[in-house]
Amino acid sequence: MKILVTGMCGYIGSHTVVELLQNNYEVVGLDNFSNSKREVLDKIKQITNKEFKFYEGDMLDKNILQTIFSENKIEAVIDFAAYKAVGESVQKPVEYYINNVSSVLNLLNVMKENDVKTLVFSSSATVYGNPEKVPIKETSKTGGTTNPYGTSKLFVEKILEDLYKSDNTWNICILRYFNPIGAHKSGLIGEEPNGIPANLVPYVTKVAKGKLEYLNVFGNDYNTKDGTGVRDYIHVVDLALGHVKAIEKLKKEKQGLYIYNLGTGTGYSVLDIINTFEKVNNIKVPYKIVERREGDIDSCYSNPEKAKKELNFTAKYTLEDMLKDAWNYEKNSH
Ligand code: NAD
Ligand code: UD1
View 1 (tube, rainbow, N blue to C red):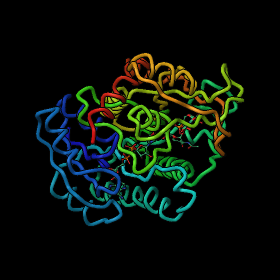
View 2: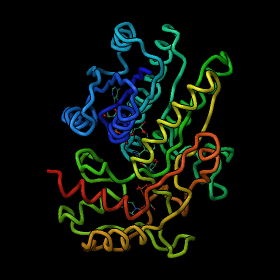
View 3: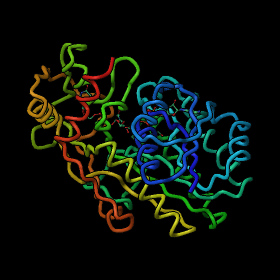
């Protein structure tokens, strides 16, 4: 099966392409390098020793999408391309809505014109807003997003629902990721945030490396076991395998609209992350407790049962694996 992967050089895209190639899928990639580097292409080749096709271009440019569909017999699309920095989205809402919503509209138009109706879309647990109850099921209420990034994901989910309602020959899988962390075992690909990381684990690895002095722990008065925020961290390689399972499901079903949480179902606190990181990597992570970060919630973790039952997907890597691999990548980069 030939799959177009948009945003293939990014963090999750690159790990997914590795798993797709290793499972004998043919990959045609697209990226504009707005948040990734060209070297990733060589790294993917190095890891897999497999060929793939790549186009440099912007999903906002309908011509590049048309060229890809006319030059390749694309059978399915996995759409990763988006901007993802929550804080930046508050400063630049228009840019975020254009890049995260218009790009999908372009894609859907070109897919329709070419009669390709199989799509996997990257959504996020952020669509649940402040959940009423944890663990979160797919049927839990969505909405109440607090930033344009989160709202852009919610909008696209709605667009996909409307599209499917209008034409139920579409075959769509919406994946709501919890907190992807870690890196490929090879240490060749991983997460590369621009500037000072906003997310916990990339910040921890920079502190461990001595690039940042200490970690700010955003609040210890949450309603959790130790007062710090609890999240569902999932190894990025498990997440990547979740996409292979989603493609397998769509291949089997031929039509439908499916929504799955991709998480482990276990919540860990910020202090769990620090302690486990220190233990498995034998390296200190100095930290200070500071004020809460605006918009943060106590606990967010998934009920992963639907993906287990319908996709045959279960995350395999432990928190120890995730933090070892995150450090292995940071240690070897730059
Ligand atoms: P990333 O920034 O590492 O990767 C996105 C890739 O898309 C980058 O290589 C970027 O250059 C490319 N891109 C962006 N806009 C583009 C455009 N208009 N045309 C072509 N290429 C474009 O992000 P990621 O962490 O790999 O996330 C992938 C997807 O998963 C995104 O849709 C993101 O919103 C979603 N997601 C990520 C997380 C997370 O924690 N990383 C959590 C939930 C959902
Ligand atoms: C954030 C985004 C979410 C996005 C997700 C994955 C916000 C409000 N939400 O979620 O939309 O889908 O990343 O990219 O930004 N923490 C610290 N110190 C730090 C960084 C984080 O204590 O320097 C704490 C946070 O308070 C939280 C936990 O660590 O309790 C995880 O934070 P983070 O990695 O930013 O992920 P989320 O907040 O879950």
